[in-house]
Image 1 (cartoon, rainbow over the protein chains, first blue to last red):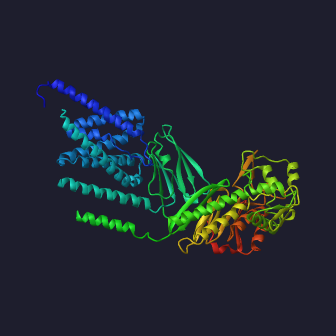
Image 2: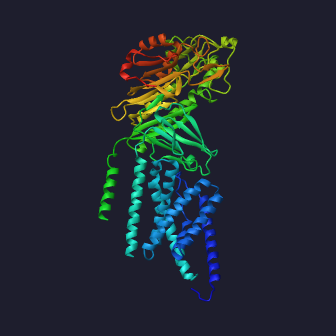
Image 3: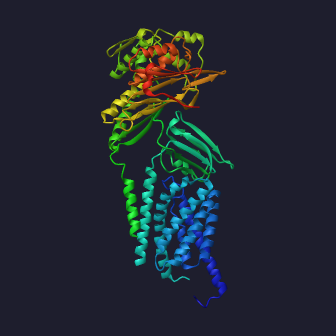
Length: 175
Length: 124
Length: 334
């Protein structure tokens, strides 16, 4: 840490960084919502916004990650105008955050991609669980294999991008 | 490095499991009874093999949601829906597929259950 | 780890076994002649199935072009325009279907009549313009039965009555079903079902030796069935007054017209179902029996080889011809 900077200034910097990251996550979330996927299966999406969550988890704290995630979900659903999907987003977001947090603690070194894969899977799992509650039937479980596969693939993609992003961040020595 | 390899194997196995699951669900021998549920309550149960003429069912939700379901001989589909994403309409027709037709925003799920179809055709 | 691998392997083997070499089911539905035509066939591979379905549906579309009253340049419309004033040459299919139509006209004493196109246009049932004709209009269009006013010599047709206008609505679907079946068989398909807007044709047996189970629509609740029957390699066609109709001043007018009165047939039947090897026979006879009524209709069927019937009367009674036992008719409990 740079000892020359006052705690107040540091706080401000931090807040600014979180705001920028929230905006980034929100942009990714909204851009992604515009990409039509040819599969008529609810829940299959890229999950690019997870990049920001993952980055915060690794470089900063769980608290920061949760704050940005929460803001992103709230604002994102406000913008896309789907009140019901707020529940789905929250369920997926919270579960994946918890899983990724645990994995970050357990795993050592550079396995961010795997954290992201598990995040993707648990995000989809969370959505299925909430769908089961809302729809009141177990029928949606048939979606599980599809969402498992899509969670792994999309999670892998996001994870690799995050790793690249982290490497770039380290090279820049931003604090 | 060793950790990465281990994790790669775990991921690959999970992926394999998922793919096998997809194939299994897709090949699930279909029945002919369509069960339509709204908010978890069964609204209607239709023997699709006994449907001769196509007709539609309109489901209305508490907040003005509207879903029109098209019932045909051996098949069922979402004709129109008031939900924003229209994923249920894009799904098209389900005949005997193991994957239910879901409209998440409007809390509607259509599953096909039951054994092999009782009827091979309906004369009308 | 090892155990997980073994489990996965076992699961894969379990899922992939048991579904090899058995013919798979292929389906196709297409809109033709104002109704839905669907085929469900069993074939060893997708290529065979696709080729067979392509050819069968192509044949159906060809025949629609020949027999359709709604396609302006159909052969039917050309013949209708020309055949009163002069001998008119027709295609082989046209000659064959007209020949069959005249045979069923004669057989049913005119109850089945393919020459009442004017009458059908007058009512226009099944369209937005459906209207009740006046007595005078009806009187003007009624003429002797088809077999008395149409002469067919090989491939040449002539109408001897100005009022004749051919309309194959009560027989063409049966003919097309038989033709589609022939095409499918030529492509090596041995098992399957066809539905041409509710005209059912079954090809061979289901799963080697099982019968096909066919439902008969409940004429009083057309979204349900009233009975089931089991058939192998046979066609099942129902004519019912619930199919197309319109209402005016509380009276229902259905689409099966009585050629003698010009009015919707009122012979006491709600529906007539014919079972026979030939779909064209089923189609023509279902109309004939519906128009004739229970007594005369049953007599007609009993007099023919290879045709059976299930009739539902206006009061809901189910009547069967004497040979129906073979088809295990089961009424649906309600």
